[in-house]
Length: 73
Image (tube, rainbow, N blue to C red; front, side, top):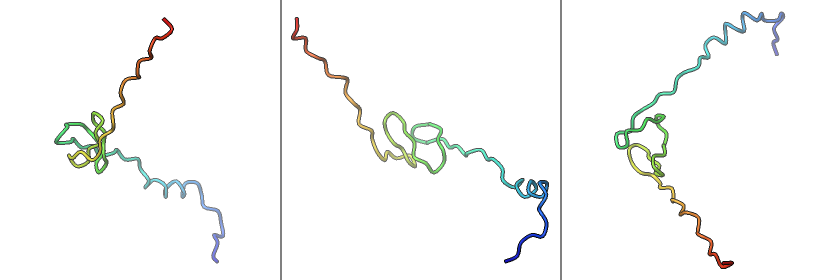
């Protein structure tokens, strides 16, 4: 199997790595809710999961903590 005869320089490695760049995620506005969200991703709005303007799932709302009876009075 072929191996390099000499070591590659740091500059050569850096030239190769210049093609990897950070990109900004693309945001879209939902037509139904008006919220900004990542494209092609579901997003939560008011305990509802939206995808492509449709409600996919609803998160059950937890009731307030039950009041404890004061029997010690």
